[in-house]
Image (cartoon, rainbow, N blue to C red):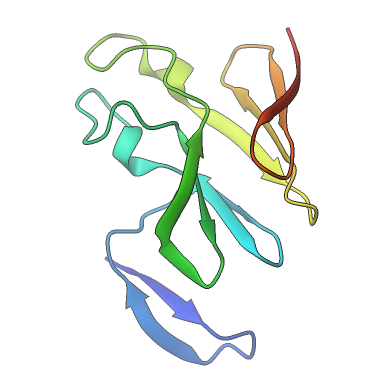
Length: 117
């Protein structure tokens, strides 16, 4: 199954191939999503972070990935690589690993700005 693109008026555009986010957050210019290339026991891009960042007008162009895997590929428990995140209209991101009680804040350039452990 492919995700579909729509205009703000909900008119259909072309399908987005190979884009299967289970969680997303958007601002007026960017979209962040769980990076499927870095998931599971055998990720296709294990060096990429668990969150992908793309421009809203072209989600196929990954600007950056953040939140690196903290459990290497092939090892248990993979649940620690799962992330929760949110982005505000200033493109600042708050993210955390599940179920670790850390909160990481990223600035509008997607650089780690502050963290709490």
